[in-house]
Structures are given as C-alpha cells and as structure tokens.
Length: 64
Ligand SMILES: [Zn+2]
Figure (cartoon, rainbow, N blue to C red):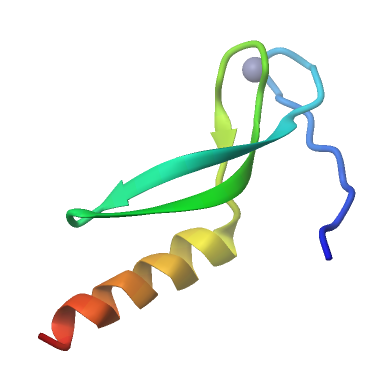
C-alpha cells in the first residue's frame, strides 16, 4: 500500500515522481522508492526512512 500524495518541488514548482534509488550507507546499499523532482533531481527522503532505515543498518553493523 502506497500513499498517493503529490509532493511539489519548491524550487521548480513541479510534482515530484516516485523513483527507486539506491542508497549507500556505511558500505551497505539498499534500494528504496523516494520522491524525486524530474527537473532538478532533488530527492525527498521521508523522515521514517532517514531515521528508521539508517538505524536499522547501524544495528546490523554493530552486531558483528
Ligand atoms: Zn526541482
């Protein structure tokens, strides 16, 4: 289930699109869908991803 909400890039004033991007964090990479501006390429990373996912990755690393 995905929310159908349109985010507007405040620079270009155009609707941002869903785009699957690959993140790299502490030598690990994962893919996630984020909102991306088709004009300037700015991505909007939701707080839950920035907070939750990063902590999750840190957690994995600390277990070794
Ligand atoms: Zn833009």
